Length: 90
Length: 262
Image (tube, rainbow over all chains, first blue to last red; front, side):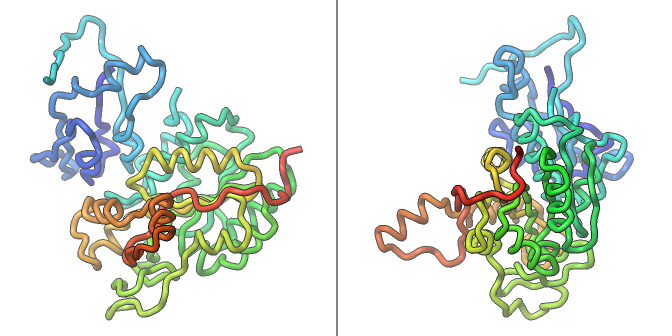
């Protein structure tokens, strides 16, 4: 699983940058073609829910998804054989 | 399977302003419903008039968008006609406290088996930021340009005094706690009232020194006082901070219920 932001729904309120415990969401810089500055994902492979959702069979943290007022944050399945990065934090 | 299935996806994105907390409360309500094993055919969402009351239009169940302040009156009718339905009311502070206050206290008195989620943004957001019964003292709005001089309504205290079975208050910052509170409200027979304080960046925040959406979230985070801590302060005789509001489960009791499932 990987994090994804729905560009058609996000209104750029940047609430997700406040709530993520890993600070994965960072305030963006460039406006998109609708004039909305989408947040950027900083090393989204650190998200616990992405890695462990299937193992535990439930949504683990999910605070960004609950907090997003525009229902723009969701998790999508990866393509088969997609290159994956693993981030280890000490 | 997640609560995303409960949205009318063709209606999204919704018309709420960027950063409006109403969407967060819809998410929490649907996440709680998802754990309840309710069918979409047996669930009815009722709402009145206002920003918050547009919420029922984005949910793919039977929904009623009723006249101003009369959401609880319509919900009472739905529940009395068919007690097997699960009735959830979305309402705002202007809808519930100002024009629908009478319906609210009498629904609490009768203890009807419905759940009311009140999105309290402390202002009339849709009509241009007029002061509502819950606007805090000293806050600016378009009808109180020198600061509100009236004492605000405490909706949770009102619901407890009128006799609701379950009352709790959270903010749009406390999403997980709010989800649990709404779930407990669904499980409790009788009138369940969940007050959710939400941010209103367009009408309330920009007049009251919250330039960014996150400023108001930080304010709600810093000025919420847990019920358990409040009880401890009162017990030990220490002064309770006056600028803070109490969050948590405020009442959970077993009064006789009207319209419970047979």
